[in-house]
Length: 137
Image (tube, rainbow, N blue to C red; front, side, top):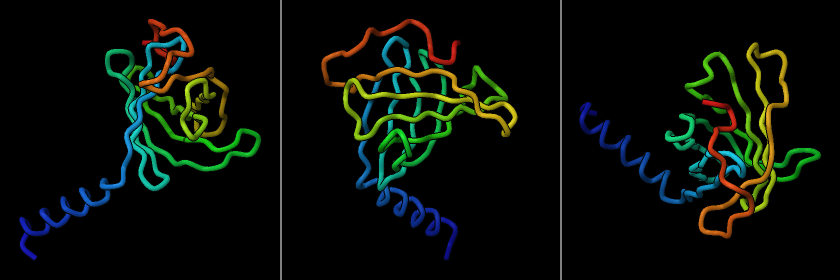
């Protein structure tokens, strides 16, 4: 297959995979973080509002013992090099749902970092919008 045809086929496959994707936006109450989540067949990719704290990540939806159904994703923040964050968000997404975050800087020890509730875009605000990111700037 010619390189241009291979590239076109790859792009078409990627577009077909996004056909069933759903985009949802949530804000972490008390923080300036606004997360845009693209959900497709149990997989999730997302970004944090770069006006607050530039971050991106990916993960999956599943059942977590002691928590229930959740989005669980690894997140990287440019303002926190050398740290790996893991966020867990109650799913299905609903205003007032819980979230929590953990961090590791060595891949051996996982520490609780933060948590709270979130608001789904397009619904009445549950909590106040903050001025700082959950991870700091």
